[in-house]
Length: 197
Image (tube, rainbow, N blue to C red):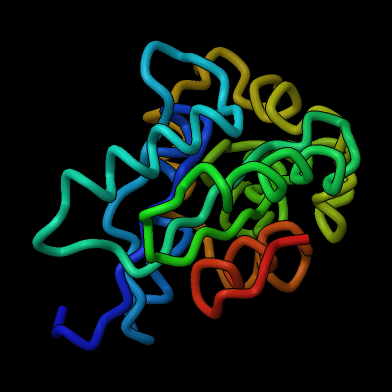
């Protein structure tokens, strides 16, 4: 991409997100926004404000020749209120990432990234090869335990980060953004700089 592109690093909770998120934001490339990488905690550690700080600082200082313009920290709500989940990140990150001149924004997935997949039912259904069950795909952020629901409809197929990536490749971000406020907030944070919720 030309120098005019905006370079974004996403900080997320695990391998599923690391593999899937670049596919879900590929629509932004045409607008000059490139997600260079998705960084996750090592050894399956939880994504906490301190861990997010460590990942941001490590990324910032290791890329001195081509530093990112923005970091977006995306967290799962896990059945909690989004503001309750985001508050510790919003309170602590600004003070903890001193020296980092890139924007640092927070966004959330309600309840998990997998809820976003159900928002594009037309492209998800052929991939899983069956009916999506009784979930309301017009309101994916309201699906209780979307990860378990996805695992159940996959049947004998084991849900892994690679399977998540395969699914994400086939989905349309525009459709997801129309139906999922949490995905729209994430996409807005990556693209425009507004916070996600």
